[in-house]
Length: 384
Image (cartoon, rainbow, N blue to C red):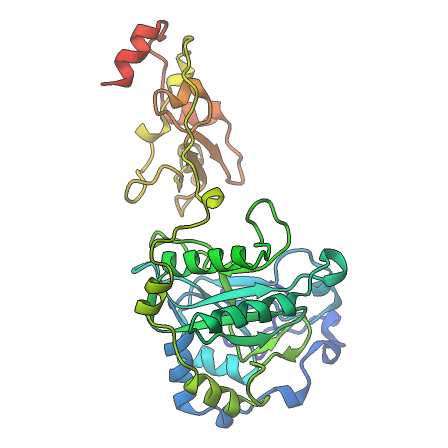
């Protein structure tokens, strides 16, 4: 995250000790703060708006904030302009500050407890000169098609394009909304970012159909706030550009129902080429060495549920007094046909120590016992 201005509440300044001192490089901070007319007084924010914002847009209490872009260095960073807030849950106070323009929050798209969403969104921000496509025109074409389907999307302007929001009257399964949107964009021949190796195109939110409880998925900058990088408020285009008119517009906007979404997707699935295919390793007919028999799962905490791709505690880091959070080691299915035949996963330490295979095996106290040499022995072990 970039430099944090002093007005940011202490519940977001994690680990802050005492009042923050403004460093010399912030002496010209006035050049990088939003214009005063963009900031609302707290007294201007009506209590019911806060409740409505929460009811319409908040899928879960975790959230993130946008970089404040208060120095030139912030603009030169290549990293994403958002940071997740780990030690605070979204409160009415955070929403008030977002609507006032003091900070800008981002919201996650899925409630992992139900794998459902209060909204679905499309984000188009590609450059016409680079792609040959007009982001706003593409979103407007999508909006028109959605209206023909009986839906009422809300178009929110943005820096290079816009966000198209579909609000629901009750949470709708993420899978249902994704099936509808993917097929809709395919019908209109509009590229989907991240699908079919497209580096540009429309992004679909949510990007997952299901989430484990400890995962967050992807999110989007919350509406009705200030885009910190360009120092502008981007409003929904079908309402006057003031916060009272915006809430009035959103309040009257017809919501999509679960029944409507299920009817629109009846008999449909994700496009065939976008359905993930399980990896089927080729049959290995050679021998497997003792070290290739080492199964990290025998020495580490198991994952929640039946996951095969997960993070867990690194034995070597833990032996050195590190990895307090227990998530330095990435375990995943092996693509090595020798190991995958026996269901033995790969693993890699992402901790600061970058523990090697030997480090981890040694920390586990493991010693090889025997070598599997014949195909008959492999088949016998495979079907045990």
